[in-house]
Image (cartoon, rainbow, N blue to C red):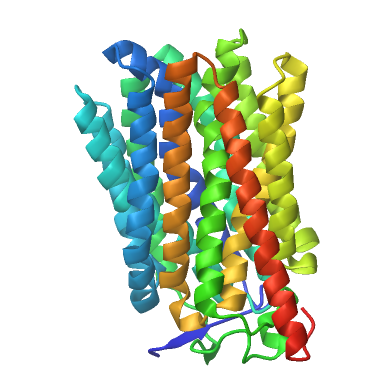
Length: 420
C-alpha cells in the first residue's frame, strides 16, 4: 500500500531473523571494498610510484560518491523498498572490484571508486538496509540496528586479515578480482530475498511525536524541535565524527607499520578495533541505545572515539596500540548505529530515507575528508600523529553539537510539559 510502512516483532515468525542475517551479510560483504583499498594502500602507491595521497583520494571519492548517491538511493528506497536498490549496489561493487584489478592509471581508480563503488555501490547498502530493518521491529530498534550494522565490524575483523594474506600471496590485482567474484555470487542473489515485506501496516506519515510509546519503542524521545534544525545539527555532527573516524580506518595499518610493527600485527590492530565495534553493536543497541536514547548514547560513544584518536597520536608500543584499538572501536562501533535510530524517532517517517540520505551524505563527506586529509598531512610531515590531533579537534566539534541538540530537545520538551 502506497505511503505505508510495516512493522513486526521478531518473535512472531522467522522472516525478521532471515532479513537480519541477510542484511548483516550484505553490509559485511560490501564493506570489503573499503577495507581492500585500505589494506592495499601502500602496495598501490609503491607499484605505481604514487604518493599516498593518490590512493587516499580514491578512498575519499568512495565516500563522496556514496554520500551523494545516498540521497538518490534514499528517495528510491522510500518509493520502492530495499530490493532493487541493493541489487544495483551489489552488482556495481562486484563489477567495480573486478575492474580495479585491471587499472593502469590513477584516473581509472578514481572513477571506479567514486562512481561504481561509491555513488552506485556503497550508497545503496547501509542506509536502505538499516531503515528496512526498523520496519520489521516495532520495539528494540536499537537492538535490530546494532545487529545488522555489526556486519561493518565483522567485515573489519575478517577483511584486513584475509586481504593482507592474499595480497602477500597472489598480489593485490588478483585479490580485487576474486573479491569481485565473491560479491557477484553471494551478495547479488541475496538481494532478491529483500523483496519480502512485513505484513502489519502502520501509518508511515506519522513521526514519533504522533505515535504512542507502544509503537515508537523505548528509545523514542518526544520533542517539539524543528525537524530542519534536528537534521542540520545531525549533518554537522556527522561531519565531525566521520572526519576523525576515517583517519584510523584508512591509515592505521600504514601508521602501525611505519612505527616498526609488522604488516600482520598492523592488520591485527585494525581487526581488534573492528572486532570491538562488532561487540558494541551486538550488545550496545540494547544496553545503551534502547535504554539511554540515541542522543545520549551518541555523546558517550563520541567521547570514547575522541580518547582513542588522541592516544593513537602518542603511543607506539605493540600492547598499547592494541589497547587503544579497543577504545577506538568502542566509540566507532557505537556511533554509527545511533544516527538511524535518532532519525527514525525524530523526523517524519515518510521521509526517513531521503533525510537519512542527506545526513549520510555529510558523513560521507567527513569520511572522505578525513581519509584524504590524513594522507595529505602524512605527505607533509612524514608521520600520522599530527593528522590524529586534527581528528581530535573535529570530534570535539561533534561533541559540542550533540550537547547543543540534547539541551535544545530537553528545553523544548520541558516548555511543552514533556520530559525527554
